Amino acid sequence: MIPQLYRATLKYDNGKIHLTVHSLNGEQGAKNRIMAAEKCPEKAIISPKHVKIKNPNPIKTAQNETFK
Image 1 (cartoon, rainbow, N blue to C red):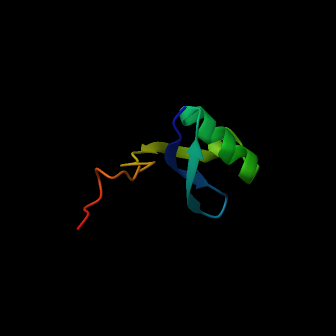
Image 2: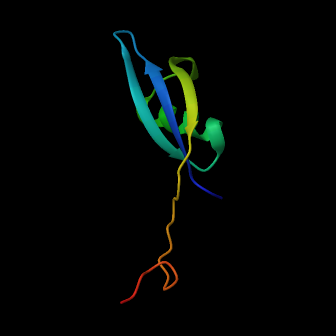
């Protein structure tokens, strides 16, 4: 499984906050993590969007390094 990054907006009575969470189980997993952390219902979470990670695990090898 590859960790995925999600950015969501959470609407409270007095306003909105923006959260960024990691999830291994897609959008529903991100929603579950937010609901557990914030103790809120699912309907309070608006617009969860997937954020692309360019290179999550860069591997340094001799081929990538320049030696002089």
